Image (cartoon, rainbow, N blue to C red; front, top):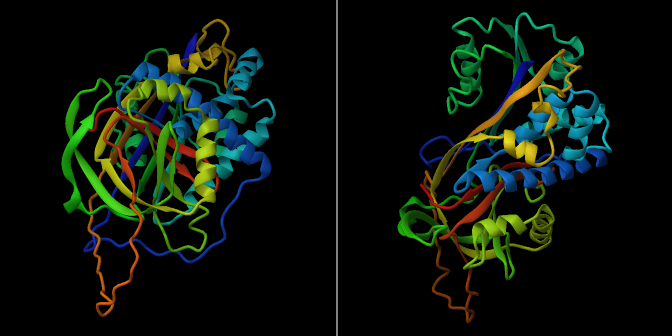
Length: 419
């Protein structure tokens, strides 16, 4: 049985631009972009699958996990086009896509890629797909054409026995991810490998409300095993979307351009979700469903912001996530089975050997924000401002990167110990 190798590359970096350096371009007001009703339903399906995947990945990976459901969903979307028979039926059930035709799924991912690149010109985002196959493998032309049309995939036949073959693929990944990922495939390539499907996501943006680097101080962070360790904690007090109940606090930090008249309706956001004190992060993740997230997000959308005293650690994570077992845990098994895998829409006698994802994230406060306070002629007004809400992420927490107008979740992570 010949094998298909499926790799996913998800990269995210955040840069806060200094006042003396590059300035963000202000967007002209533009109408918000939307999906069709059916495509919004697909967002819901993908996000629900994302939470199932993150739960099983988190259980296996443990502390400091960073995962891109967007990257996995797009790669599985490409792979789905090559399946047939019971293998396709199993994917339909596990992915929750029984109500979607193949053409609707492909059109959704095509539109998604367009939207995410159009939302905010001050956010640097790339989504790239590629299909690399052994030059002697006879692939169905329909699979190649679908990959090109709907996923904008670069397709190339390679001599996998060539000593430079791995470098060609790795250089493609490095180019699409600003050199954050350089070695996604091993050199030499597997002797029985027939194809590599690769998705790459790269994201780089600045906060709308930046942190003052001078306020960053060492402070205690209580880890998952109740050890106190020092972490560099960024700090600001500002108005932000805020939610709290007996189980959690959530604050939303917007990225990119704040000038558009529709900026409250769209754009990229980080949601930081802090479990209540004395709550085990693993138990919290097990019980924090996509339904609960939607409730929190709906509250944030309906309510005005609150003054929040925010402390958030600087952190950097690099992960290499083996995804075979998590994918099987959510019900996709036949693609790995040499006897039963059916990829008749690609070529005969194929199965998936490996699915893995490499990720990188860095959150810091690089940059400077100037501010001035003007006193109005010494006038005193008899009013005491309310105490700001305290949001101190000094214990394990979750974070998500998502786009507001579409609802699409790009990344999910957990921080157990800032590094």
